[in-house]
Length: 238
Image 1 (cartoon, rainbow, N blue to C red):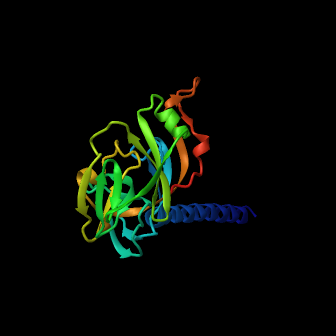
Image 2 (cartoon, rainbow, N blue to C red):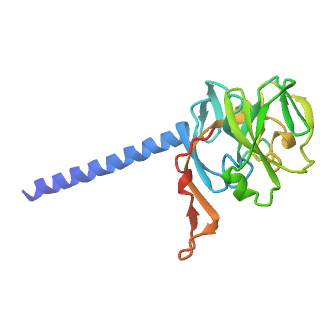
């Protein structure tokens, strides 16, 4: 009787261990090939993505990348203009960058008086007033916000008033198998205007949504922890 109970206990314990191992295995496979979380450390994508946002990235949408060697072995599709994508920083392969894709291979990119042109056609935009991010991020009115429309994507971008750094750029032609990326915080983004193009092999995935957002500059009064931006939970990135 005792031996039978011991066998049942061992069998139940083995089932628990097997269930845990299977769950861990599935989680590892999902993270390696399908979805990966990323933490946003900089403000280059404000107002779309804020510092302290934690996002999920779809890694399978563009192809299959092998772990360890970090090389894409199967290619499904390329990102489209206007999509937010994560890629390996060309100048330091230990870092991941997140930007918005602006130019495809063969595109002519130019900026004239702060207005973006693709293949000599100006990208449509209209000024936005009274946006919550604009009011909180730029209380003294240093910034202007626009809604920019690129192909099927519509999104907000920030420009610093009277900032001459990126008023004019190009024209340049995006090389074969490369892409041109820019941050939505146009005057505070280290992107293709500075370091060049994103090779196709460096692309890791498409940004999906925010699953956690922490404001480290605003902490709770009793416990020294960053405040949670509850309103950003589940926000789709587009």
